[in-house]
Image (cartoon, rainbow over all chains, first blue to last red; front, side, top):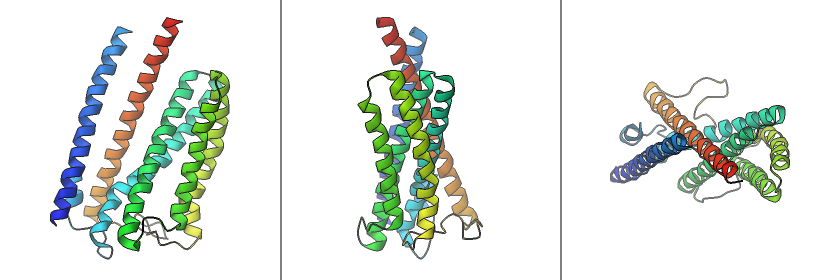
Amino acid sequence: MDGNYVALAVTLLIWVGLFFFLMRLDKRVKELEKRS
Amino acid sequence: MIVASFATPAPQKMIGEASRIFYYHIPQAWLCVIAFAMSMIFSIQFLRRRQIADDDRAVTAASLGFIFCFLATVTGATFAKITWGSFWNWDPRETSIFVLLLIYAAYFALRNAIDEEQKRAALSAVYSIFAFVTVPFLIFVVPRIVPSLHPADSVVDENMRFTMGPLVGTIFGSSLALFTGLFLWILNLAVRIKRIERARLEKEF
């Protein structure tokens, strides 16, 4: 069961990281769209 | 959904803990089919309207489909190592997804080989339509007509009845929705970035 929690932590880290990366990218794209 | 996929009992008792990969592997394979289908639809749109924005959408969808297809191959190989003892067995399912990866790798090779924009878009649109014809055959037909070690009744049985219990079905449905949302978000962002790049290039010339 401990292995499951390690896998859960890694998966959560990847998803949360991806989510924040996409949020930041979305914000920057919106700024660029406003400028152009 | 992510917490539930690890904190609830394994979806298939016979396979055990390895069956949890099912919440990630199946949505990836599903998105690979959806992305390639979208690429084909945008390709048809390009051939009808001749607008380069449709080609941008088609190539972006195909790129994402390729990434999800690769992820499905990697998660499938991991599952194979745990349950069958080796990462790659040339099982019909593994062979068919490998052929699919090669078909779409050729799509990108074709695009890179042509410099002229309209010609590249037109030829790759035609290729994309023919490439998608093989997708249902390679994903749904081949693994069912040739004996395979791959679990065949994870979602529906041979009578097309849903095989999941309510808890597993809810987690699986949420996973499917999460992955589809992620795919649509990335597709939208990538297309918008391409549009900005194109507008900048047009300003420069």
